[in-house]
Length: 616
Image 1 (cartoon, rainbow, N blue to C red):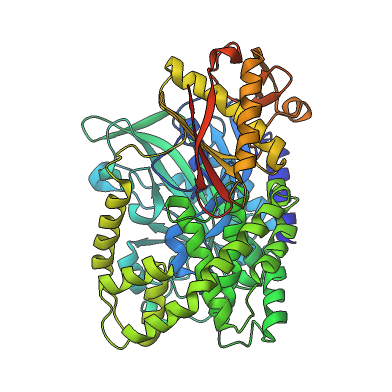
Image 2: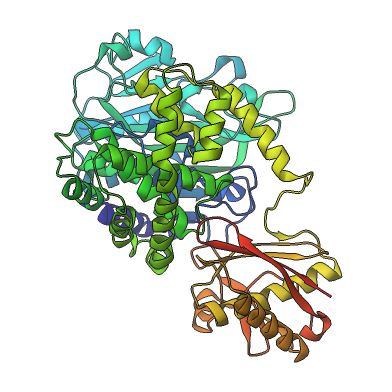
């Protein structure tokens, strides 16, 4: 069963059990400034797990695009990836343990075909100090589920991870672990939860690859051992408690189920190979790397480089399809880190310059059906990747020579910052190179130098650009309407690929980011300005209406259709000139805007131009 088939089979299985299939949310979180990317399947659904009613009902299923930047340095082994898909099903006050555990076991064994004898599970051992009981319900359910398959499932009390290495398997199949492993809340451990916070036990499912235990990870093996024998392929979270003001826990009035299972890990279990980079989702890019390097992935001494390139290019392509462009700030910096680390490992493999676009196309081809936005933005993604590689390679050789000069000694924070500022070396690349040389890097001093640099770059501005309106004042509303005119005018002059990449509106000005790879000419800027002012002078009416997403698409409305819209959306039309999905607010007629003037056009990252404009 291929990865695409697994994704579809899972969602269809739960649809047949009354669930509504919902689309993946974008990797860029909506209305959550606390995190750069969606890092789990449940993250976009937190408001509904906390009590808000979901418009699609109480039983949901999907496959969620996810990205964990903290795993970048871990990529290179056989199981860590930065981008991954999380299969998820949810009960929002509907079914609970008695349905969830048999269902997920049925899917894994009867639909996917995993051998039940290769599956092991963990449950919550309880927390006496916090008055939380052992999850005997899940343990007993698992015993019955395995018994129905003719498997005697003994229960073993492992306790903590520290104790597990001594306790070992003990011929068990169901293992009690403490709260550090089998409890979920947003705050982590029960004692860290604030009053009013929900949480509950979870039950993880592990696949046994049967590989020999490596004693360096502990005297004996157990399901959560890091030796590689076991891989977690799913976790059912049962939110059934709420913390009280006195520190105790009470039953949650509406109990929820949140299941998450890594698609790539499940695909590895299906083929009974612990190396996730051998699954079909990675096959096209691994095959291309083998062809252009004349090396075999399985026999290469540089297998880690194969994995790093494959993972990082895939992650960058998916992020760019969701509107993130390479830059030196926030999400864009993560994309740039991925690409520059991939380029270095392309060199390790002896692969010629200019290969990134070719590799990217293989990723696009694989994901264009599951995530149409990837195919829709193929041209801009490939163009931006080519630009990014060309730009970095201009300084890479010189940077490597500079690194060699200083690598014979301890690399100071100033040295590392010099490599970053002058040659575009992310700190992680310097650390990687230094590790190969056995040289230490003063990362703390680098971070101090970077903080000073950022403070200077801000130039005293303490307002961070997050997009959207700063307020709902009359002038901000006018500028908001002007962005719609500007967006359409840019597409008129630059082409339909000139889609919005972000905006920031205050009562003093508008700032608008647009997908475009080249600096706009004065003639183009003037044409855009003239069009906007022409539409203002025409005093066009601004009308609002509600329709389905499909109706909005059919009407030609501009919008980020990879985003998770509701069943119905608000659409604003400006005369017969502009139509966009938008939450508003806007002026009633364009004549109220005044005269439009572009003040500045500049780069906002690879493949993105930023326009600053005012109304006079």
